[in-house]
Length: 142
Image (tube, rainbow, N blue to C red; front, top):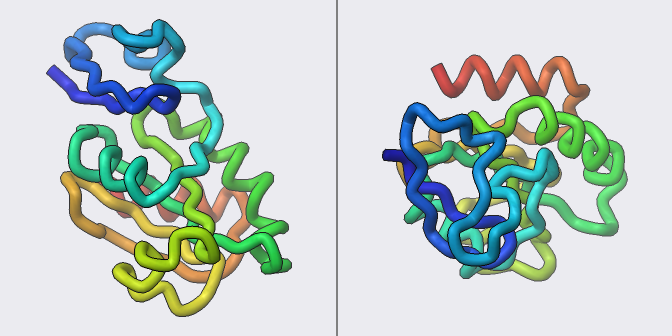
């Protein structure tokens, strides 16, 4: 069984390993568990995804005023469509979620981090094109 946190209602769902996750719906709110889009998350939502979900997380720490972040946004969106349901892509607004930004010592933005089993596995700073982002994620989740 694989545990997945719903992106809509934050309910915890258990998926059998043999059921395709891409087509799975939440047992509580009945919406899709994987939407092919990054999720903008608050600190409590981030914590729930990190602590409860078995799906690795790729997290974009960004800010609205940041030029490279604006360039990275459509790339991150495209990556979500390509990488889900193997990973979940989250976006953390560094201005709104300063505790998370501080906890993970984000010094420049955008910073992309990979978390697996609740632990940071890799990070990279700066805007990436789609091919570099996909390659970096795949390399760090082997």
